[in-house]
Picture (cartoon, rainbow, N blue to C red):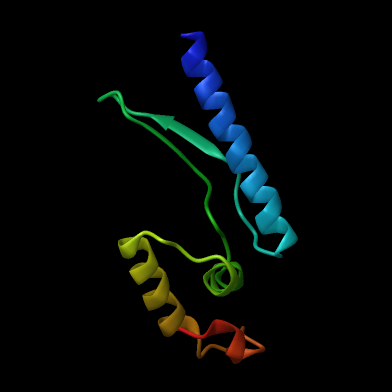
Length: 93
């Protein structure tokens, strides 16, 4: 049990560090979350909020996961023509 709690704590701390880095990049994110499902699986994560933060995430960080990357590209293409973006060259897709 203690080993598992150490595992949970280290993942939460790691995602907290990621959240701090995102903050330094001016990317707004939510609190780190941990969910435990009935099937015995667990999920850790944090959300990125606000359209401009998501666009900044796309231009500076991105994803390596194919599906997540594809969804992010679609989102950027859909929202890159809006007036919220002051410098369109930052969001090349």
